[in-house]
Length: 189
Image (cartoon, rainbow, N blue to C red; front, side):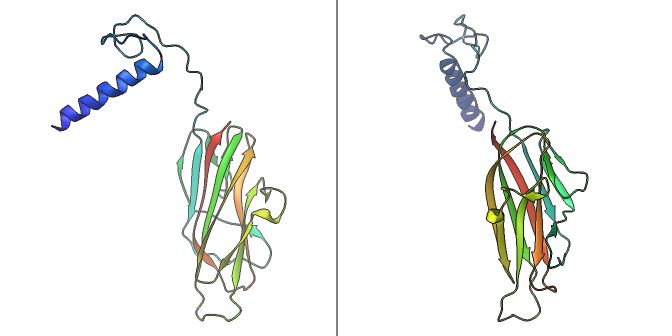
């Protein structure tokens, strides 16, 4: 039964491709160059070329305690990575190989301090491009409260060779962080 369902679905996909590429307005059921339907048609160029999918991610699993001044966030695990995204030389950023609009996500989990604090200590994190705030201002800064996690997502136009990373600081020096991830996905050219 499973083989029959699979073959039926494969036939539907092939028929859909034949209709998509307009091999023949009258489907004949046999083998054109694109879908095997014997209609004698040929596959025209796809009018909307796929820009290609660029993606990459970094994760960090070590406990870190940042200082009061903004510093680069370290990562110790990479992947998955597409052919167009590489890990920076420092290992703490992702370098895009193609220009385009990318979605950038940064997630950080604050390490719980031993005692809850009435002043709620927090970490300040931001997404960086080439070492500076992603949009050149404080709009990409976000706070991670003691004993919590936060995720921040932006979409930004990047140029080939740009390095995406993260920065972090703390207003309470014993407050650190552990689990974190940085990921990028290319949305368009």
